[in-house]
Length: 295
Image (tube, rainbow, N blue to C red; front, side, top):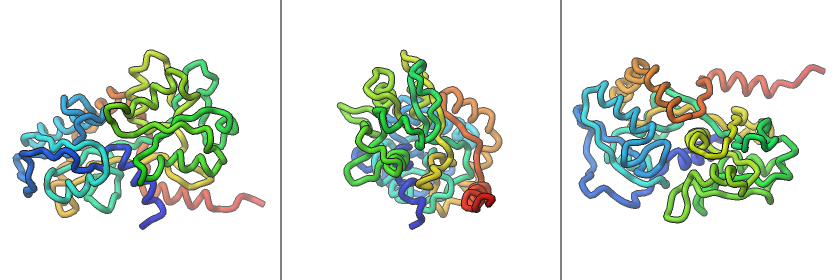
C-alpha cells in the first residue's frame, strides 16, 4: 500500500467511488459487457455528480458517451458508501465516471478533469484570502470539514489540519445523504454562519455555492500540503474493469473527441477545475520541494 492510498480512499468515499450494495437493483445481474449497452454505476442522489433524474454532470457525460458510441445507456443505482469497485469488477456495471487516475483496482482512462479541496467563505467575511492550512487564523475559527463513517478516515484536509494543531475547533459534516443529513450541509453551514469557513471537495462546493442565496467565495487549497505531504488535488478519469482495455481506449477516444462539450458540462455545474498534472510533473515538483535551499 502506497503512502498516498489513505487519501485516495477518502477521495473515493467523497466522490461516490465507494459504494455498498445497500439497495440492489432487482433486475440487475452480473453479466459481461454488451457492446450495444453501457451500464453506468451511479448514485441515485449524489448531486452534482448524479441522481436518478439524470440531473448530474456524470449523467450528462454518460449521455454524451452513449450517443457517441451508439449504445443504449442504463444505470445501476447504489447509494454512496464503500465497495464500489466490487460492483464494477463483479460485472454489475461497466464504468464509473469519477475515479482517481492511476487507481490500481480498476482500469482508468487518462484524466478528463482535475479538481481539489477548496476553502468556502462568505463574501465580506474577511476570510476570502485564506489560501493555506498554515494560516494562523484557522486556530481561532470554527471550521467545517467532512467526516465519514466511524471506520473510515477523515477527509485529507481534516487529517492535515491536525499537523497544525487545529483540532478542537472543527465541526464535522457527513459526506453521505440520509433522512437527516445532506452532503451540501457543509456549504449551507457557511452560508448560515454555523461555521466561519469550510473546507470541501471542489465539485460539491462549486455546485452548491452557486445555488446559495448568500454569496460565497471558493479558494483552492494547494496541490499538496507542505507540512503533511497530503495531496489536496486529484486527476479524475473514467474507471472500467482492468481487463476491458479496448473499452477503456474507446472511452478515451470519446473524451478526446468531445473535450469541448465535456469542459462545458463541468463549467455548467460550476466545478472548480485545475490544470491536469502528469505523474512526471508531480514527481518533478516533489523532487524540487525536497531539495535544500541555498546556503
